[in-house]
Amino acid sequence: MGSAQTGRRNKAVVIGGGIAGLLTARVLSEHYGKVVVLDRDVAPAAGVRRRGVPQSFHLHQMLPRGELILEQLFPGFLDDVLRLGAFPLTDAVLNWTNRYGKMLMPGPEQGAFYSRGLVEQVIRRRVESIANVHFDYARTVVDLCATDDRARITGVRSRHSSRPESGTTMSADLVVDASGRSSKLPQWLSVLGYATPPDEVVTSGIGYSTRYYRVPDAKKNALALLVIENDYTAGIPAGGVLKRIEGDVWSVCLSGIGGLYPPTDAAGFDLGLTQLISPAIAEALRDAEPLTTPRGFRIPICVRRHYEQMEQWPAGLLVLGDALSTVDPIYGQGMTVAAIQAENIATCLREQDGPDFERDALRRLQRASYPAWWLSALEDLRWPGVEHTGGRPFRHVGLLHKYFDLAVERMTRQFTGPGAVPDPTFLSYFAMTGLLVAPGVVVNGTMLDALLDGASTEAAQAIREEIRAHGEPISTVLADAVPAGG
Ligand SMILES: Cc1cc2nc3c(=O)[nH]c(=O)nc-3n(C[C@H](O)[C@H](O)[C@H](O)COP(=O)(O)OP(=O)(O)OC[C@H]3O[C@@H](n4cnc5c(N)ncnc54)[C@H](O)[C@@H]3O)c2cc1C
Image (cartoon, rainbow, N blue to C red; front, top):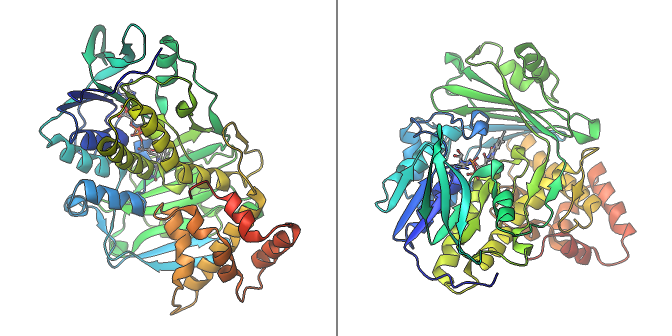
């Protein structure tokens, strides 16, 4: 198998019309004559939770970086979601409890809360309106087509989702796998004779249980967000989130980690809400009418596929979104990672048309999504039984845990006192978890000095001890701890 020229840009096929697939179709439409999105689901009705995306029942939050990219790709995106009933955040107070206290934060000047169904609907409508993008629903892709030497992918084989005998072949100059966490790409590549490297895995053992409630009249303008974090220091794996979405509805989720899954029956769900580190969600729901029963979702492992390490990678093929890596959903990163990756594909298409286009793009997608993977894995590694295998080992995990403890503590305290004026230095932690800035902006010697300045708490003591234990300057150790380029 040799390398093949990238060549023509007549037609691209995207496997999967979820968030990653839709955003990819949007960026490909500027570079390919025709883009076809194939999805195994039937054409979705407005805002519905789709069968092909079982996680769409569960609470989804778009991070600030994701919202920025969506606004760039689809100017007026925020207006669109608001028009369809998303909850505006202009006057909202965001209520966030962790082991250090309760933060009451003003909502952003512009912003909205909405469900996964709504955000997908808005993106899909925009992509459907692009003249050279076509959708083919109820088509399940079953295989890749390749040249005789298998150096180039030339299309896909698919069948009608409810008529397996109706197989067809569609040719393409580029095939993009955006088929999500159930991607069959490792098997498809194996059939073509490509050996894939072992996956990088974090055994997070995450569980979700989600239930919907009608917002009581008395609280219609009040409560937009309640976040109650788990507490690893007290061994409490359960966290909870209540989030206002479109249609005067609260989406409420209980989460668990380390294989400790939340209950999915109504009585257990109610009890679980009372066992969080704050009773705030249980109290808010006291007079709220449930609209559904709770529904569960389990994610035993988070996976990062290292296709970029393969000795050979076929021309005409890319992969992104959950098909490339999955993170712990509690940090709300997946859709934003897909948006960042789509943005990177756009850059590659503008800058690179040489023989190594696909492999370069793949490396770039991996680099762009690494901060999210690193942050998600690091947090999950606080829990007993959670292990990281494969891939690049993480450096100085214990130090980073203490560093983030101190950052979160300082950030929390400045929002707890009445009339407190937040120090923008500490807000950069939120900018990092919102994927707006790279980890290196937050994890460095200068920031550590600022975090330690005047701090005499347990979290500050813990990191001072850790610093003493290191023989070399702590700024060097921190530089070594953050992802390369971060
Ligand atoms: C419980 C849970 C909660 C989450 N919460 C958040 C959150 O708060 N914030 C966030 O950003 N992310 C969250 N995520 C992650 C998020 O859902 C995904 O990362 C994001 O939607 C990107 O997914 P995707 O487009 O790659 O895949 P999907 O959204 O899963 O889309 C894949 C698409 O491919 C189609 N498909 C699959 N196989 C085939 C095939 N063979 N042929 C044709 N079509 C196919 C499917 O029908 C589907 O439409 C959560 C995930 C889970 C599990």
